[in-house]
Length: 333
Image 1 (cartoon, one colour):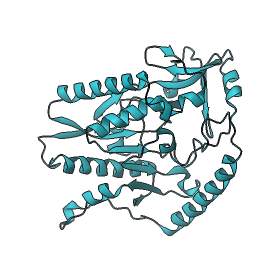
Image 2 (tube, one colour; image 1 turned 135 degrees about the horizontal axis):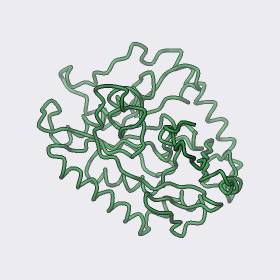
Image 3 (cartoon, one colour; image 1 turned 60 degrees about the horizontal axis):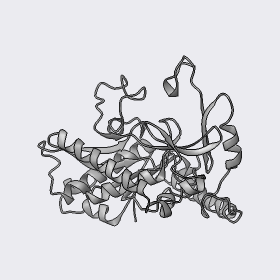
């Protein structure tokens, strides 16, 4: 219900972290200025949230941050995660240590979070995440996780990996059980990139804070927004200036960006509403627009050079089998 304007995705996430940490501190009676308690984040391995220093720290060491800035220091718990993919023509879930379809025979089954949330796998996810969270805080003296920051469904710069939505839903519920604010970084995945306006339509849960950019203006001009609930907004109300969200930008909500965004959002709504009417029984979700045939993606994963493939909305990700030069964004080839 509240919007904070900035200029790019990285800055939008910086603002989101400020919001989340302040909300957590107020809810738990913590003085942020008191160095006795250090607030960190819970995030996903391979995550990437931008190149400004604060969000650089919300990532494990990689080519994007290590050696890029002398003040870089990763601050948080970075969880390993299961991914969804086609491999040799079959869909399944890849865990950090194994491949398993868990009886799920289609992408439609995997993305039916409402049905899967009553499964034993959901309980396994929840218990495992909660255990890692508790161990992290127990080992890190005077450190508390003050916000959960995730890229919903799709890890972009981290390798175009699709995360099992049930695992992310369990992660969100663990955070909620600890009264920790939930932040969606939808800079890459939001605004119909994955065929839905927001990944909350897949995860069936709302964040406390969310960041958007990229598609916001149709790629015409830089502008970003950080959305927050009324409860988060109330955190910054007070009689003193120090209580406010003191994050300023010279081009905040500039007219050209706002006009571009209005036109872009209207165009997306018109385009995708028309496409949604064409959905059929094979569609992953009634509200999702699909640009790639899942049967063809499965066939693509059978090719000799292809390790795995996956598609959702407007995104098709194909992982090529690595050679001696390595794999991922650090590969020489």
